[in-house]
Structures are given as C-alpha cells and as structure tokens.
Length: 621
Image (cartoon, rainbow, N blue to C red; front, side):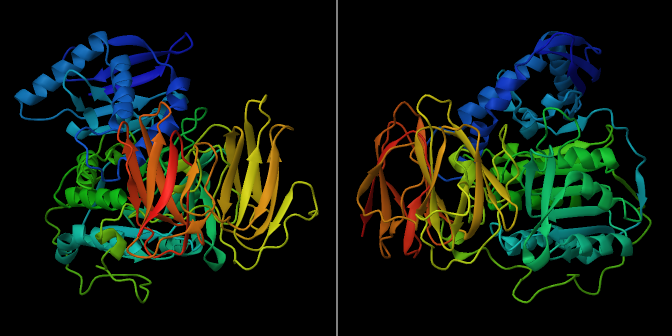
C-alpha cells in the first residue's frame, strides 16, 4: 500500500492520498496534524526510547505510553475515513493470500519527515505497523532506478569511524556480529565483506576510486547540524580527532565511485533526523536524492546493543534472500530481543527511491568463487573478528552502554539529561535553536585559578576538570548559553536553564560563551566539587558534585524522597575523571527504590543532571 501525505491549503492541514492498494480504490482525504506540537515532544520521546533499553523488573513497560500515544495520534490522523477502509481491505486481502502489506509513505512536506512514522500504532489491531509488516519512507518524488544486474559476490565495504575524542563504541562486538551474520554467504562466495578501520575521508575516497562497492555500511557517530540544517557523520581526522562531514559533502564523495553503492547502512545516531524546512536535509534523505537506491539509518540516538542487534538481524535477513524492506523489519525484531521492554526498534528508518525494493538482479547461473580467506582491510592488532563485548556488558550492569560525555566543549544545560550523557553514538541534543556539538578531548593537568580575571569577560580557561555554573534571572524565560572551545571550534548549547544549574566539565582548554539574555550569569568553578555521602539533591540543580565512590563490593544508593508529580525518574552515575557513564537505573512511581548503582571500581563519581525527583544519595558497603 502506497500513501502520499502532503500539505493542504489550510495551515495545519495535510492531504492524504492512497496511490496504490489492493482494495477500496484510491481515496483521498484531509487530516489535521499539529506538527509543531509533535516535534516539541520529540526529545521526551527519544529519552523514553533510550531509557527503555535499561532492564527493569516490571510487568507493564513504563516508557511505552508516550510512544503508543504518538503512534496512535499519527495513525488516527492519516488512516481516517476511506483511507482506513483501504488499509483494512488491503490487510484482509493480503491475509487471504497468505501475504503481508508493505506500507510505503511518500512524505511531501519537510515537517512530516521529522516525525516518527515508525511509531504508527493501530489501536484496533493493537499493534505497531512496522513490527508487523515492512514500513518504508519515500522522501519527495525520487524516481526508481533500474535494478542492477549482479554477478556474485555482493561487495560490502564496512567502515568504522570511532574518533579518539568521542564516546567509544563496541567496535569489536559490532564487527564480530556482522561477520557472524554474513559468515555462510562470505564462505560460499556470495558476499565479499571488507573492513576499513579508522575510516577517514581520504581512505574512503581511495576505496571508492579503486574498487566497486554495492553496499556501504557505516559504523560510527552521527548528528544533526542545526546551524547548517543538515545531517553530519564523524569520520576520523588528523590525530584521530573527529572530521565532521555533512550530508552534502558525503554525497559528493560517493559520486566519486565508479558505480555508486545501491544500499547505504548508517549505523549511527540521527542519520535519519530531518529539518522542518528542507525535505532532503537529513543524511539519509540527501543520499537517496543523490541517487542511492536505499538508505537504512537511525532517527534517534541508539545504544550499542540495539545497533549491533539491528545489523545482525538486517544482514541475516538479506543473506536469506529477503528484500530490503523485509530485512529492515527483521532488524527491528532483532532489537526486540535486546531487552524485554526496549522501544529502540522504532529508531531505524528505511528511505528508498521510488517503490521498488529489488536492488539487485542476481544472475543465478553465475557460480560464486569462495574466497581464500576472510578479508579485513587495514586490520589492526588487538581488534579481534569475534572479540566478546567488554566484561561489564556480560555482567549485566545497568551501565552496560558505555558513554563518554562531551569533552573539550562546555555543555550548556538546556538539553535533557539523556540528551547530554546517555547517548552512545551522539553528542548533541536534537532541539530547536541548538547548534552542532561534537566534542574533543583535552589533557587533564591542574586547574588554573579560575577566580582571577580572564582575558575576556566571556572567556574561561581551564587545565583540568571543572564545573560550569549557569544562573538565570527569575523573571526571564530561562537562559540559553552557547559555549565554544576556542582550540577546536566545537560548540555546545545549554537550553532553557531556569534558576541555577551546575555541570561537570572534563576537558581542559579555553572556552568562550554567549548567552541569549543579559540576565544570564555564567561562572566557572574550579575542580569537580567534593560532595560527602550521604547528601540530598533536588531536581533542576544540574550535575552533583563529585564524591568518593564506595569501594567494591559497595554501591551508590539513590533513594527517591519525592516524585513531585513525575511518573518516573532515571539516574546516571558517571566517572568524574572522564565523564563516562558507569551505571544507569530507573524507578517508577510509587516505588521509591532504593536504586543501587555499581561504580565499577571508579574512585570519584557523580550523578548527572536529572528531572523530577528529590533524592538522597548514600553508600552501601
């Protein structure tokens, strides 16, 4: 079934047209959709999706209600009247034939592309559409391209870009699972898999010029640059630092290939995120417009576990002869196995040109030639093909998603808690008025005396971990402060800071800040602070001061004193030395804990900015 959704004459109205279905004709209707309100809920929705990946002993998923509500709203708006009849008829006809319904959404307005259509929820059928049947997006009217005749092997180039100053990825685990998924086909000669580690612009350029690649698989960090209004991928630059490649540059690079890849898989955060002003601003949409037949990407931040599971399910399905849209659904089902209540299956997005998902026409008479040995271009010592995940992952700690917060840029407190700390593959908040943030590392030494006059009133100089304090005028609408590392030019934004908040900063350097309100007061505080257990903290105060972690087998205990009207609260424990996420746990009302967070041998830790709950923090030895 193919459905087109585009702007109508009246503001807030959209025209819905059924372009193709197996029943009930091709009806057209008009629906009302408050896109701005839905976009305003996006960050909270993303936070719930990420938090859902944490295992919890509960019968009813506490995070799912917001996703189901958004999915129901979208379904009821678009699938109304005769359009719903066409959908129901198509489902019934397909079931009688022993088949399924593939749903292709053609999105014709920029604001629509930023909505989470993969959350579509049918209350009558009590199911999420994308988990039952394939769901695809077509951005604008990009035409189909002819199916590519292919004689085996299918050539897959897998890129790994993990710059040294960004959060570390489970590279070995993701590589091992991808190789495991394709092992049989690689051994038989149907697929040729090659790895490009520490992927840089130059090395990928050389690969594209030297050889033909049918599939490009990117493993790394992605983001969305709101100053340029387009998607960004982080390649490895000089000295291992991030080289931020925006979508338009990336598409130009792929045009250097002798034959452009038919499929690009972006296993990185926010690679499917879109602007509200440009249909083709996101990395995935830009690639499709440039001529790539299909792009699998991520519309939200995604945890390592979910990303690895998706890749395995996706490629296993392709290896079993499934179409690209069916493989996408298999990737979602694989994510469902990561945790009982996970919602991260909604994060992957499939964008296609036209409506034909047959990317290749394989010549069955062409017998593949098995390779002599597995290929691993630029293999590095210590990176095993089947290396297990780190021990902490195997032990089931709540901090199994290893995250390193922004280093080398001041983090300004508007982005929600998870947006700042709990994203394994992204370093910036996707929010209106935010700017691009990808942080770099510095060398910790000793902190200069920060109470003296700096070279400029809005300049901060630090040689070691420090704290950023932002205060707003009580009569104002909250502060938004942008802080730039003058050495790296990377910038981070703290939005809508009310009252006074303090944030832990792990990176040395010189920083300059700008505020949107003259009533905003920005201070720098030396060191990471010295909290003494037990202590209390209220929400909205920012990160706690650093405190000495209990020695093993002791734990940090968080006891909720009051929920203050919130349904749940999530707490994250970080290493004060480098900001890495150590443990995370969530408590839902009316239970108040206690929650026990294992510091995993860290000496100094802190709790990151949290919402909602008054808490008491203590030690259990």
